Amino acid sequence: MFSNLAEKLQTTFRKLRGKGKLSEADVDSALREIRLALLEADVNYKVVKSFIEKIRLRAVGQEVMKSLTPGQQVVKIVHEEITNMLGQNHTSLVYASKAPTVVMLLGLQGAGKTTTAVKLAVDQRKKGRKPLLVAADIYRPAAVKQLELLADSCGEVVYSNTNLQPVDICLQAIKKAQNEELDPVIIDTAGRLHIDDQMMAELAEIKKRCQPSESLLVVDGMTGQDAVNAATSFNELIGLTGIIMTKLDGDTRGGAALSVYGVTGCPVKYIGLGEKADKLEEFHPDRMASRILGMGDILSLIEKAEAAVDQDKARELESKLRKQQFNLDDFKEQLVQLRKMGSMEDILNMLPGGGNIPKEVKQLSLKEDNIKRIEAIIGSMTRKERENPGLLNSSRRRRIASGSGSSVQDVNRLLNQFSQMQKMFKQFDPKGKKGKMKNIQRGKMGFPF
Image (cartoon, rainbow, N blue to C red; front, side, top):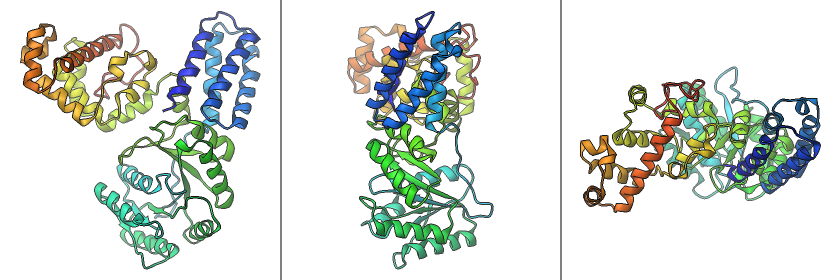
């Protein structure tokens, strides 16, 4: 997510940090590089212009020029301005004072609206609520069936009735929610390939009759400025309370997410980071700004870990790390638990300085097939070999490869990744000797960061 933009910005700031004193020429050079990086990421040019002007105004003032660490001061200013560009503060879902809360999802076809509706229902159930999904798209072939199948796979409830018009479907669903104490009601409305009068009239009628607390536009983050244009049109014609940005895990440059608040004034409330039902996250502008600038996102990492990790195993692992007893069995167990949290690269990028972590660790795949291969390789080792990988000479490695149905190269790759992870753990010394864990909520997560 935003990898190209993040890499370019971090390269620019490394140059600034190396200077004991900054001149206006240094600031101008950095701002040119930042401007180019943002434009290449497809950020709206008006947003970029305003952003650069704000930084210049602050960066050439007394705040920076008289600072003992001017490079760090500029990074601090850029972080604050990126946070402002993304929406300043986290904006939670608004619930009605009297249940049920009605959440209306809008969007063009292909943005991932139906999938997002199910993800939002799963998110709300995790928070202790009992959501009701509403299949109000009666036009797109199999749209109702798609919602029902996705919801059924997650144990969510759907109201559908293809004999009614969309407005009546929504009203009946709200009555059902009231009678069965379901809350919130999440309406999957119909989309089109492009904005047209008929679609807008129907959405306006649903909004008028159902009085939703939230009117959230689902936009495809990979469409760049087209997503911003769609958000502008929906906001002007229907009125939005927020935006859900999907497909940010794909090959997206990030321009839509960085532009949409500045252009529309509508906050991004959620971001979609994958196809699975649990891949919807609340959007925090300050945390995202930190990740873009390579400062990490420890709070989000802790939240992911608390939701995915067995606390007893976490305490047991912490004890082993204190005694420097992390072995291949622990390595396997951590991979299984990490898989619940997402890709290795995403997890490590949430750490401050995550960009400096060895590529061998970042590239460790957490896909099911790879986890099974690793389990097979480690399972083919003796207990002594798992506890002391230094015993694994070439003949033992051939035996393990043969016993696990893998190649010697697979065994070597696994051992190299384990070695790199051991080195990384020593950097994050559990005893706090190097001061790198003092400010992290230790013991709350299986992966010892």
